[in-house]
Image (cartoon, rainbow, N blue to C red; front, side, top):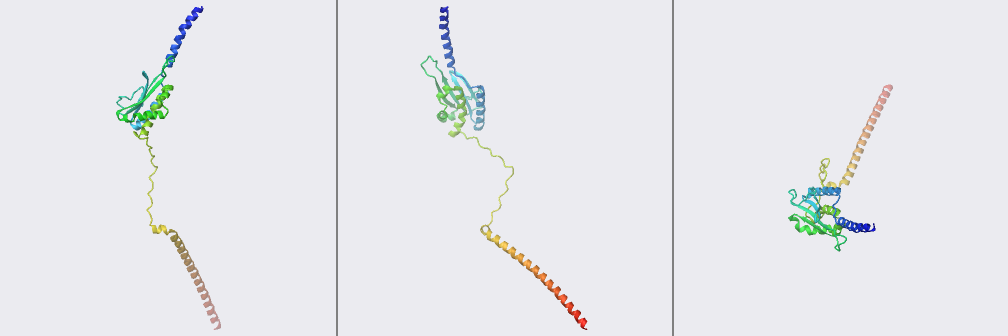
Length: 239
């Protein structure tokens, strides 16, 4: 019995270790929802900048590839992508029994017109924290993050312009500006307003004076008429 158990342990343990080592050396792609979100962002950038963007993650064989055209579609030699850029990363996991360390290589590939900018784009990814160590730790996430960072780095390098802001149209046409007045009137506006006010007051006083003068004249005429009538009555009575 004990011999059978010992034999089972001798056989099973190496198998378990082998399976564990083989699983630990597998590079996993990003989740489906993360790939779909990345495609949507790359699609918007491609529409605005006229540049196709994508990614390729591999471990010997290709683990994940995609672009603004969709997950699983490469931008390389695609008829809809004469201008293209993509992040290409290779991740290698070594077995725990090996003395070699895990490692990754990260590059930016593109069409011929982007060759001078490619080293700067790789340096920009490192500045964003997307270096080899990050790809070793989280290869799937790092590939997606690096792909959506490419449009920003392209704008930063001056190769493409940022998305312009489209101004909203005014609800109605603005009214024309009033004609510019003379400096003579503008500089003496206070004095002219005061003079106009005094003139109006003077006219008002003249009008009031004329009205009172006519009223007094009328009253005097009435009084004189009464006096002449009284004098005539007295003359008649004396006669």
